[in-house]
Length: 283
Image (tube, rainbow, N blue to C red; front, top):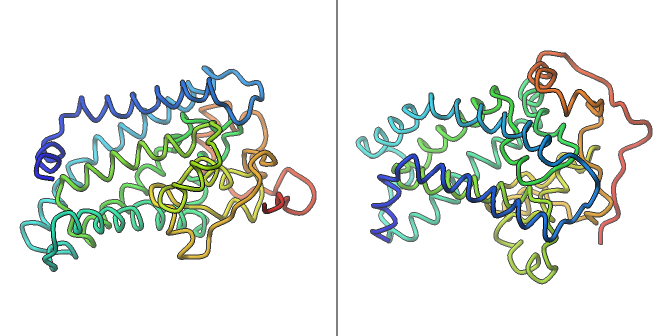
């Protein structure tokens, strides 16, 4: 455990970049070998759009990183937060701290973005993707990157997280997001074995269905049990899903970077699809 703490306390930026790029590469290759959806789309063009938003996400977090480091240093120095108020074996503290960072920094942030209209407008960019794959993981409007950063910083204060745990959380968060957005067929026995603990593609892609009520389900990123605990879990036949969001199904809403950057400021739109929300049958 000490080796892990030492490594992540001083993890070089180059290693974090390598983990990010390596994750996308692995899941990209798996998508080619074991795709769930085989619909035709220009994968590299689609990836180019998502890589643009990945770059803006990295840029926002780079310029705000000093706040996160300062926050972590402050809670440790001032013995503030749950991990600073209790004394448990380091492994137990690490697991519990990681769970709470995921709850506040990912699940709560995501749930809130779906409930508060002004935050939803920024999160919409993520949902406009009509060909969800591993590159979709970091398809976030720069404004949403700031929103997510605020929740992560809040989580650091609540948890009292040392910087090594913050970096562990961010690394796992990035890799699991790439995994659960991947357009891959996960064997049923693997899905059933691990989906009680971590979010799988079969679970998360339900969230990307283009209509309510499925859009407002399965908010988790690392740990899947938060959705079960808070009653937001849905299990459906993935083959019947349609990606996107019914207010923004136009071509430019998911193909034009300039259009996507303006989406939060366009105002409210009516759904472009007719009929009542389509809910695939639960199996």
